[in-house]
Figure (cartoon, rainbow, N blue to C red):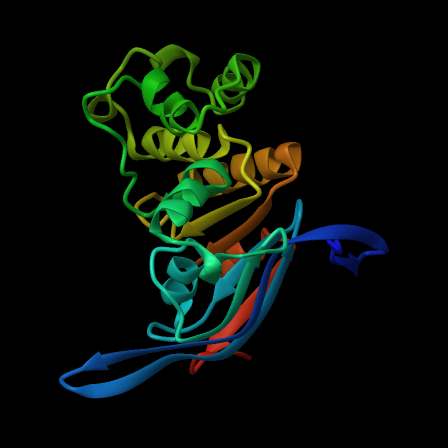
Length: 233
């Protein structure tokens, strides 16, 4: 029997889209084991915007990569809407990233040979989830109407990151993961991008987990989670 998990914050019950339990990850460097994650527990609810903070080397990016199925944990469990990521094979994890996850990184990772419009719809078309009405809304909300036929190299950094965020949200994912998404932007542009992202996350109802070193940006989200020495502090 499938049981839906929910958490209560601000007197509202919300569906838990991400559940991480007792997660461990160790790497080897020069033959020596380095424990990066040491029993991490974390929940993110639908529509919730969570900042993941901590000093360099605390395991923030490692945790995001494990959640995205880009690497495998040593032990513990990661569930996306109740489905265990660790139980999936490589093809199933790739399908998960394509169809149910949105990924945004500091490097914009746009396809240079595609126009803004085609970059925006790229993931949704691959996933068979392209929605013309939602595409048009993203274009309007992200302020991209005037640049749809341009190519990434013809855009500012802020415009490129807006396209990357729109591409990730075009599939209407369960969860949006972002790793220092505004790291290459100036402060004013970063604030604008973060405000737009927060609005679109609320619009889609997906969960949002963002790695950031910025206390200013983390304060713009609903909740802050800090990793220290591989654990939630």
